[in-house]
Image (cartoon, rainbow, N blue to C red; front, side, top):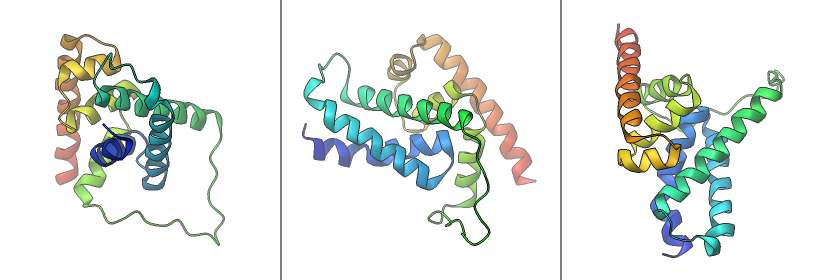
Length: 156
C-alpha cells in the first residue's frame, strides 16, 4: 500500500481520534499531520507484524499522549485580547459535545472509545492499547454508560 493510499484511507479516522484526545480542531489537525509524518518516515521499516491500521493508530495514540504530557508541564495562558481564537469548522453541537465528553475521560478510555467509534475490532483495540479483549469489552461498556449519562443531562 502506498503512502498516498494510507493517507487517504486513514486521515479522517486519525483526525477524529486526535479530536477525542484534545478536543481542539487545530491541535487535532496538527497531531494527525505529525502522525502521518512519522508514518511516512517509518513506512520502510514497517514489518507487517500487525495490520497497517493498528500500527498507525498506535503511532497516533502515542503522539497524542506525548502532547497531553507536554500540555500538563506547560501552563496555558489566555490569548491576548487582540487575538481572537478561530472557531473550528462547524461541527454539529451534539458531535462537539461528544468530543468534549470524550476529552474529559482518562487517557486510556479516550483511545478505547475513539477507536470503538471508528469501528475498530475489539481485538485490534486490545493490541493497540495493550490490554486484554475482556478488559476492552468491560471498559467500552463502562465508557458508553458514562457518555449516555452525560447525554441525558445535555438533552435536558
